[in-house]
Length: 188
Image 1: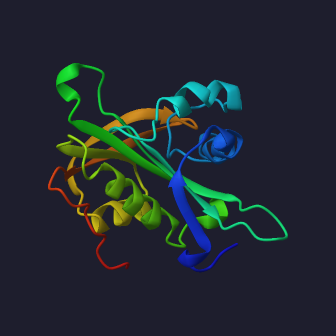
Image 2: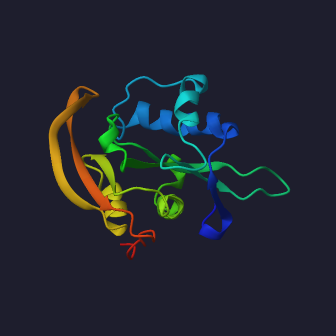
């Protein structure tokens, strides 16, 4: 497991990443309320999702991998996406963003690297706002979003049911379109 960001490569996602992306997401489906999906996916079921995130445009997928070594190829450590906020055309200048890290990569700055790369990739897109829904409680995700300048705009109380209980989702908003990506604040 890398301990330094220099040992991590961040790049656009590719179809070759599909199995590893699915494995990371399925961890959160099975073990947490971070996502409200309740049934794990097969990689082929996630292919349409992967293909909806292009290498350009407002809907992106960035992945973080360990750098390849002579001994073995680098492992996928996490990913960040920007996706349509809502399907109606007037919502097109808004995106919903999310980040998922491999369980053993959480807390090592991978999420920060991914969001930095994602927002840099989106800097020249015709976007006005980014939104993130954070199932509560999730202090690590709240801190990550606040470091990037997101502000809390409201909470949906008990909006989802998973693992036999109801969960709140706090919503965060970030202005975009200033021509430069937001810089994360200091880590706490």
